[in-house]
Image (cartoon, rainbow, N blue to C red; front, side, top):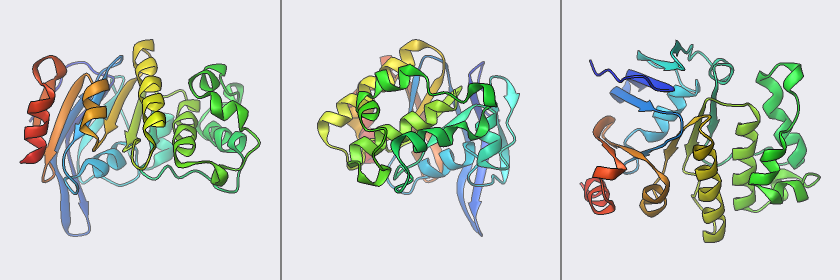
Length: 238
């Protein structure tokens, strides 16, 4: 059994199935506060399934996860969110008929009433959202919706932030803005960030550690200091 040391997110030996098909095999992952952990791999290797498992969106058939040392009940997304896990899904899942402000306020659902306020730093990270609070989510561009989805996740005051393909279909200038925002969040030292990403240039730019998956298993774990982009590309090509 693989065992990590102390980490804000400690996933150990997770198995996951869709019906009779097993997707994840004995997957372990650690993510520390003040770091961005990139989960990499080609399409269909289980990256999104791993995030769905940790965020309570799909039941696991084996293994466990801890957040800040406490075992997380992964029975539902609500349980995971209450434990401090925030998930920004692939495709963003913004409510199209609700305003930007109303989308943000949906993040209050797992918080006590005393915390039902939007922190000003949200608008400092994503100034466009402050300008567009009254606009409907469905009227935003793809890049603006991605910023809204990340901001909504941050409303929950997460200990762990999970992001699935945040650069997919996004224009280059907004990719830069999202990368800058994630680096700011990392440097604040208040949460662990796990990033699933196909864009190797983006991932290698901002990530501190890498987990490469292949066929539902972890193929490699490496710190950026010992893992240059050429090595990452070589692993992704196999």
